[in-house]
Image 1 (cartoon, rainbow over the protein chains, first blue to last red):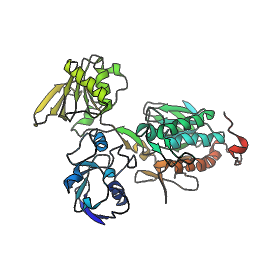
Image 2 (image 1 turned 180 degrees about the vertical axis):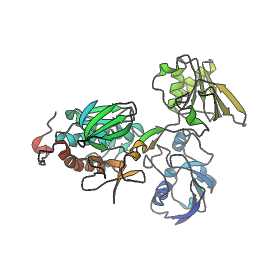
Image 3 (image 1 turned 135 degrees about the vertical axis):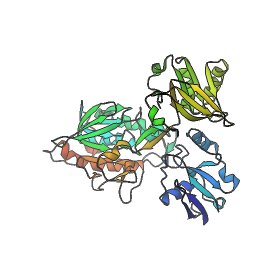
Image 4 (image 1 turned 120 degrees about the vertical axis):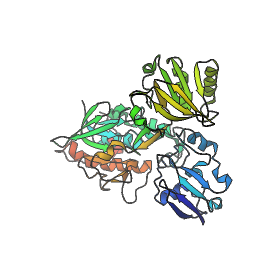
Length: 106
Length: 334
């Protein structure tokens, strides 16, 4: 298991615990926790409706891939450590991280 | 006024397949979609992606599935209204409905099927004070008719393919085109980006990089846009139009106001026939919800078949429906 913190649009923070051995991604965990994440494309990095910002955590966690940047750069707003949650694997990398929900879509 | 047996809202894969199931029961369909083409998310978001869970197809490209569905429903001569959003529903005394779109197209139907997926794909809007005040008065999110911008000053914002493509196109139409992009480089098609740089070098486009939209100005209609540059400096640009191009995002839209039971942006249905709480309105595919719901194309296909047998009684109240296999009866076109 890995434990990290999710901050919603209103700034409320909740700890979230997720299993690291089930091939899940952050978008799936956020949806399972009933956060308002649309995830229109279902996790293909094609819609940017699971936009999150990594507020705290390992540097590498804040590095978006090319596929994510293609989407993020089309948004009206994004941040230096913006990610698409569907492209963040649930792994020990997330331990202690703080993830903020972003985007007007969510 | 368009008259039809069934009006299907949403021309994605499930809406398209619903035409086939309706056709087998001799019911005619008209489809309405806000996107300018059929196929819904498949055509709009991931046309080239393979899908692996369509029965009988180990792998099929999303756009190929849409093309095949269009081929499959051809015998039933569906009609389409594309690029329009259904805004109003009016129940008639005989139980039928008249639907009105944002462009005032009217459709009279016995039954309504909402196959709207995640809702209406609306343009993403930048966060700007007074944005709504200038919508339709200088701020627009779509280039429907480029001639509209002839000899005008136009500012485009965004760094994707559509921003690049329209900048290139409008550079031959508008008096002046300004392209504003937040970054130093473009991730859109390299050919288009190269062309934009070339036009900028020739002075045909004003290219403003590393800048964000900050403020809109004008008395009633848009006159100026203030940008914020890399070092927080302000740049004021005179313009007649601002076209923000930040992609599309799904919204439930007017469907939310039709008196249906909505749970988390989805319409609650009875799984016996996928009817909503309002008689003669059904909801199938990603837009409905019920215990155990799976948002899969194949589940939407199943829902379409079941619901058509329920809708039959409203289109043919005096006939008894008998179930027939296509292998026995074939597909009898209209």
